[in-house]
Length: 362
Image (cartoon, rainbow, N blue to C red; front, side, top):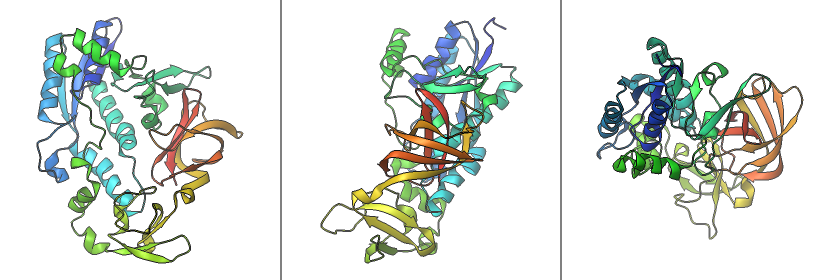
C-alpha cells in the first residue's frame, strides 16, 4: 500500500471523476476505480440510446482510463437500491405535492453508503468523487464541506446530507480547480474526447428531462388516480382546469396551459383537493421557511439564533437570514423576501464558504 493510502474513486466516465482519479494516482495514492450502475433507460421509460454516467459507453470509458493508468476498476450494480430509495422517493414526493431533490438523496443514501461499503471490503481508507467542493476540519474538530473554487460549478449545495463519519473518509480533489482547468488537464493527459465531453444538467434517470412522462411510466394508473383539477387564485376563485397536481411545481410559469392576460406562476399545490393555486410573481415571495430533517456539519447544534446565508435552490445566490434550531427542524427568517420556496427542495445554510448544514423545505 502507498504511503498516501488506498482510495476508492467513484468514476462515472466523465471528465471530472476521471481527472480526479488520475490526480490522486499521481499524488501517490493507491487508486481503485468504481463505476456504479444506478439506472437504465428501460426502467425509466426511455426509448433513445442511453447517455450519461450510467451508459455502457461511460462505463467503458472509465475502465479504459483505469487500464491506461494501471489501477483496478470495478463495476457495482446498485439499481435496486437506487430504485428503492431515490426513484421511489422522487415519485412519492410529487404525489405528495412536493418537489423532490434526488441528487441530495443519491449522494447521502446511495453513493456514499455504496462507496464506503465497498471501500471497507477493499481495505480503502478513503473514498473520492469528482465534486467541485472542499472539505476542511473546523477548529471544533468537525468536518465541514466548503464551496469549490469554481463558483459556477460549486456543488456544496447537494452535499449537506453527508455525515461526519463519511466526510472524514472523503476526498474532493477538484475543489481548488475550475472546470476549465480540469478540461485542460484532460487534454494534457492526451484524453481529448474526455476533455470535450458534454455535460448533462438534467436528472440522470428522467429521460429527456420529461418528468411528467416519467411519473406516468412509474405509476401507470396515475392519471386515473389523480385526474384534472382546478386552477384557483389565492382567494379561491376558480380560473381553469389543470392536468393533475403532480405535474406542477412551485414557481412554474411555462406549460400551465392557461391564459389570464398576464404571466402567472404556481404559488401552492394542495394535494387533498387536487388544487393548484396560481397568481402574480410578487405572490411567490416569502419571508420565512421551515426546514425539516436537518443535518448540521460545522456545528453540532445551534444553541442560539445565528445569521447565515440560506440557499433554497442549487443556483440560488442565497439570502441573509437568521437561523433558529428546534431539534431536527430549522426556522429560517429571511432578512429580505425570497421567492419560489418549494416544499421538498433543499435549503442549505452557509457561513462564508462553509456549509453550516441543510435540510428539506417543509
